[in-house]
Length: 452
Image (cartoon, rainbow, N blue to C red; front, top):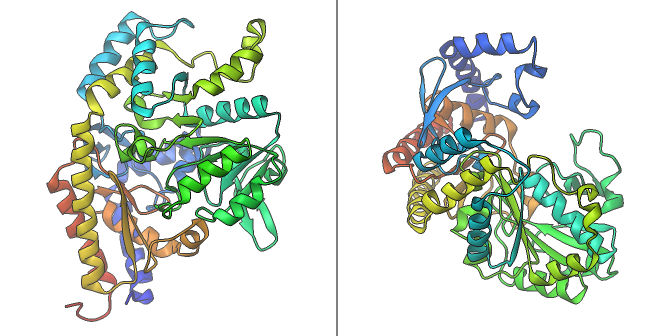
């Protein structure tokens, strides 16, 4: 089993090693603290295992190089934003052409039509609109759902993640629904706007929807940000049936679950949502997002739309649907996220999972590893979690930090905040095998006695 004494001692050694090996990143971090809050352009970047972030010089494919000259295998990939791999040539070429021809006009380009038709083909929803982030796509979909139903509440699943959507920062506690810890300055207590139940709990879902005051259920088809939590058999069928029975829209957020295939989990498992939202990887790392909806939703919207008020609807933004984002989206969908690319990512993810599973079995640690398409995650509990609370209860901050930092000091970047690895079209078997070796080495450093 894991030795907590070794863990504490080894973590201090890894922190020292990281600081000694990254003098230039430390220098830039110290300089940045005079102009950037906490020395980073976005505050969540402070949560890297070494105590300060690596500053990046350049990246290509599944690798990047930092300012100290260290090369890394990147299994984080911008937490899905660079799931295409860094600087995919087709996107680079398309973006370069578009930049030379103008980036934003507040008018459509032909690329917009191509992207809309392709998203329609992949996800099966008739109509599409563009945004810059998945957060906005979710926000705009929720506004439409409330507008069309006349209902004020939404429903999410415990420990979900949908970007910075205010209504989604809610969790279940022994005292009932409460704002998530760390939720800064919520405009209202989210329990006023939101109902929350556990993923896979059909009975709780039925009870929450019964009053018919919920405009929409917003969910990932598989939870991903608290660990990969798969739906139980029959869950999605029950979710769709209950939302239809109660006149509640179903919004599927495919931003992370796009890794399940060309049309995300929706296409792979024949789901029938009213809305689909997607962002991050859809534009090859360039800010871009989209939300699609059914013909029925479009018809309801058209019957209530007032053209003269289109610019004051609380939906959109001056740069939404800009020419640059759409050029990047078209290149990504046409040339990067092909069926062959998803098949390759799946093979690499299965290889990654097998390597981790071998380590778990060899060193007899009570962990599990699970996969969703090209996304793999190991978690500090014997069996995969059935809901967000089970996953959350297994969080071990010290062990989590050690596993991340041990990998980082050996040239492997995992996704911060949890132990997730993402495969890109450029990820190689050698990249995966290197992680397997380092993972086994990390376990060997923590386990008492001879594992064999």
